[in-house]
Image (tube, rainbow, N blue to C red):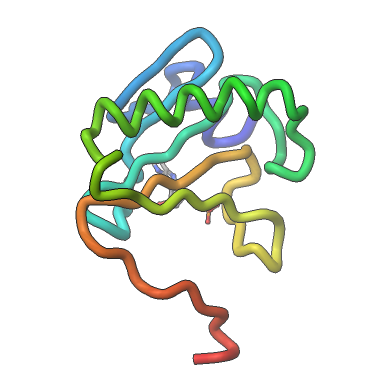
Amino acid sequence: MCIFCKIVNGEIPNRTVLENENFLAFEDINPACKIHVLVIPKEHYDSFDVIPPKIMAEMTEFIHKIASKLNIRENGYRLITNIKEDGGQEVHHLHFHILAGERVGRLVCKETV
Ligand code: AMP
């Protein structure tokens, strides 16, 4: 079972930000920003590349609710999902990163820095 499925099952603790029947948002254990929240579907999908569009639509609504709860809609936030090796994905359970609370840096590929 993957690490995020273990979080969903309660086998690994998490700092929950928001939860409903199908989705969970929790604080990233190694925050890259003042606010760094991960959003996952409770059902396992390897990445965004295989998520059914209907579930993505529900997830979009859930992410909007998190942004409201965190009060970051006015100043904005960055929403990222890494996909497979070239995308830099380390945990192979679809998750969106919400980065906020300060101005986030430019998006770059290592090779271009
Ligand atoms: P990615 O590189 O997009 O797959 O990101 C995986 C993210 O999961 C990283 O930002 C990690 O810090 C985060 N992470 C890994 N394990 C945990 C955990 N147990 N609780 C919270 N965040 C985690």
